[in-house]
Picture 1 (tube, rainbow, N blue to C red):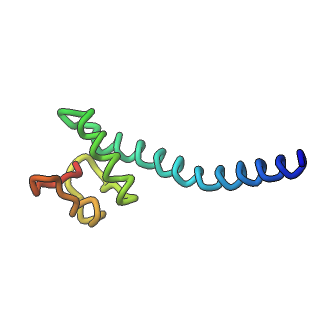
Picture 2 (tube, one colour):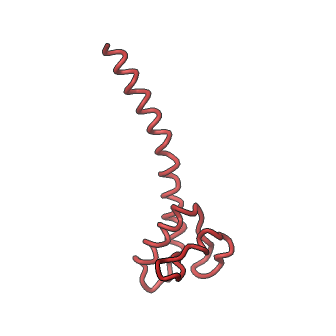
Length: 88
């Protein structure tokens, strides 16, 4: 019984670690890209918050600190509740 329980625990650990890796990789990507994107923002904490939300959903961030949204249509097309662009 103990060997079976151990085998089940090991399998669940291995499976969960394989699913966690892409999430961690994307968050590192988003953090790096959003730090670049929001480097010159007047309200940096707000810029980083929304940039990271958009990056997580769209899996991309336009290059530079402003503009270039054509590089990432999902990022460009996200709107807030007022119909204004959500992503910085």
